[in-house]
Image (cartoon, rainbow, N blue to C red; front, side):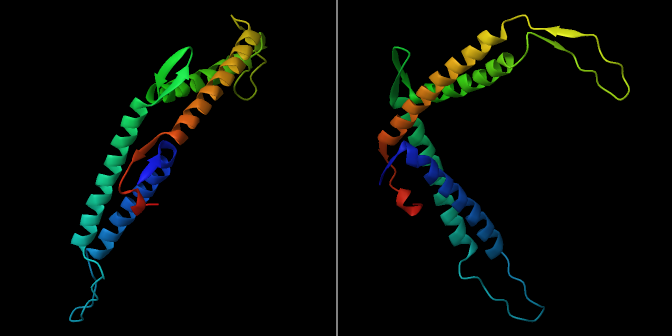
Length: 174
């Protein structure tokens, strides 16, 4: 079955949930309780069947991860006058989002602010913190970087919805 990169994450999550369900089921079917001398009721599935299904689900999870990684290395997006792989674009977006947060923090500071004192009954502090940069420049840089990373994210999303690949066991989970 063909799926897109965008569909791969929900499929991966479904496989992960299935693995967790199978682990719980295996723990349930591994034992049966009964009073001494009484017959126990055997579960409808046995531990070997559940373990086999668990092994298959784990293999599907790994296969999907490898397929997504390959597609993310093959697929490219246009960025900054050139082409970069989806792997690089995703990492770049993460890095820029982190930088935007930092730039916003710098941009939201005042040029000068009084250092607050900590503790009860302490006298007002006379320490002034001086920003050694222009907060307005950092605020504007944060806004510019945020717009750029939003554009990059849209390019990544567009590519994720257009790149298709074959994952033959997808129909077991969706």
